[in-house]
Length: 384
Ligand code: ADP
Ligand code: MG
Image (cartoon, rainbow, N blue to C red; front, side, top):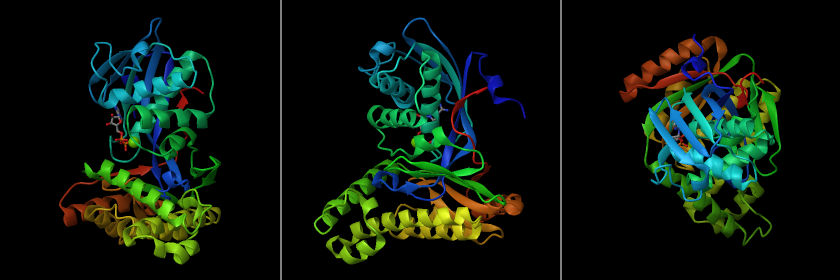
């Protein structure tokens, strides 16, 4: 295969920045819970060089789109022509803005990027883009920040500048990926640990192609519901700060103070956090089958309790589970569309992918795009 960097100019700063897929721990990062993502071997690739002035020019080869803004205009959120920054411009501009707000030197820059991550599919092309720019500006500025701090600044860019209320998991995974490892991440303490994936298993992602408008509003509504659960539960459990502090047994005891809908949301979160802990034990024992069962339970919970699935995603999961070699399958990401993630016996992965595509076509009448992924290293400068 040819080097994808050949499409980019031969400039001194070259960054490769992966997407991510979450194996378990869905809708828990904004509840201060624990998650288990991997960085995947699909990347934003970026070439850049510093400029002497304060202009930033960026070209996305994928979107066939160019943008120009001045660093002095970041607070006003306008481009070099004085028009409001919109769409994808908000991500790199947001990173520049967040880095500057963090007291870091951000220089004028010329950058070209290309990516083989599907956009808006739930594999975090947005975090990959943010970290790519954070590393480019770090290289251009000659300063050095811890990866976690970079991830947090990128999250701030996405929250406060692009206006997307994401948790820290995406930027964390993109920045901290480790080849052949899942990343156990405690979103409260920010402690993390790479855990080896079972060596005879493969991670297969199936993109339903569905991109629902509902995704953003549904996500925000779930966040509010989780906050409601915490404030109601606090009448019984005054010390809790988030659903992270509630055990499944405590929810059994005190769940009667929650309206039925809110109780279902809370049950998903507390049990999903417990599943992540169990999954770590499975990984410690190379137990792909046990891990897979937790994924299946996680999907049922997202479907029935958190109610963020769609018939097509349920169909993809059911089809996957009926194919030989599949240990587990679930929707991944926020839901309402996007992808499923499957844990599959490595030897069976090729046949699994072909069969899953065939069954989805047959049952749902549409195409699914399927990727076999390797857990990969996090965002870094090429040659480091
Ligand atoms: P996801 O992160 O799941 O892919 P998001 O909606 O969070 O979906 O982020 C997608 C957005 O990120 C796009 O709408 C675009 O603004 C930006 N983006 C992602 N990849 C690229 C790219 N290759 N070129 C330009 N912008 C991109
Ligand atoms: Mg995103």
